[in-house]
Length: 379
Image (cartoon, rainbow, N blue to C red; front, top):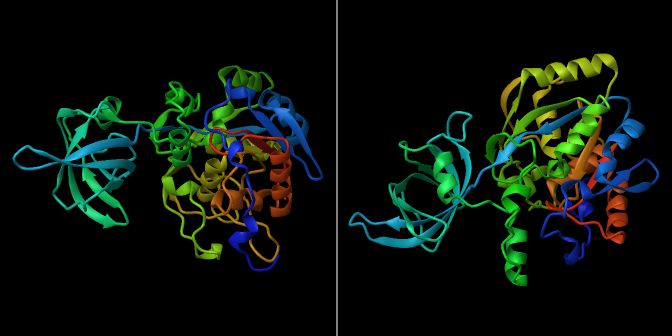
């Protein structure tokens, strides 16, 4: 493999294949099995059998249990005399301290017609655009590039405030396309843009490979002796961004907080000792496990951490030295994105782009609300 270029990870996708709404049933999504020589077309309900047939007996399934925050807030600038000024849209990114969604100081992205200034006070609006009495935020600092650090009120948990005023941060391409086509808001977004096993609040985007699982499917996996454990990686907005430079090695990943519980690390150690495979549900799980595993080891270290890991096909072999993950379940990703590069490093760029071409011909649905792939082996 010669020098890497973002153009090597480009492809043409018809707009109508970008899913704007979830499938009628979570596990009714289609599942493309990507083998060494050919692809097979399945539905997601086939997963238990496919894992046993193509990955191995009783593989270990690792999921991301991060829960999406109602992270979008609308506010107005509040003058000292109590008058309301311009509108400011906020997207919460991460707490400045503690691994808790109820931290009181957060880094945010903001949009406003006039610049924000330190010490500015923002009045929180409810979902009807009316001021919420007593609910104000204070700008601590401006970081540039539309980012700031805000203090939230200490008298009420942030999770309570978001329940009152926050909105689900659906991907921008869904919001824009729905607005363009006149598609009304979907009442089931609040449920369907969360996994059924979501538990730990902190993400601003869903770990979408997990959206296909149902309680019934999880039970079917357990009945076959397929063990499931969790990690937590709080997904940030930078995860889905296309590369800005044609040279991928110049790309800088945004940091994302993760946690590997001791019981998950122990389960991986047992699977390794017993010769069972480790299956990652989504690229966030891959990045968590590979970030938490010391060089030369095959079992992650339990604990909290921060990942800036950029996984891509490394010249000249086009491979990446994966330490933990043996198989991968993932959705279909954006052209020129770091996620597509991760999947290509796992299964081979040519193999993945050929599978994408087959998926397009077969009219698979793409991106967050789209269909899924099973990659049963690494390249």
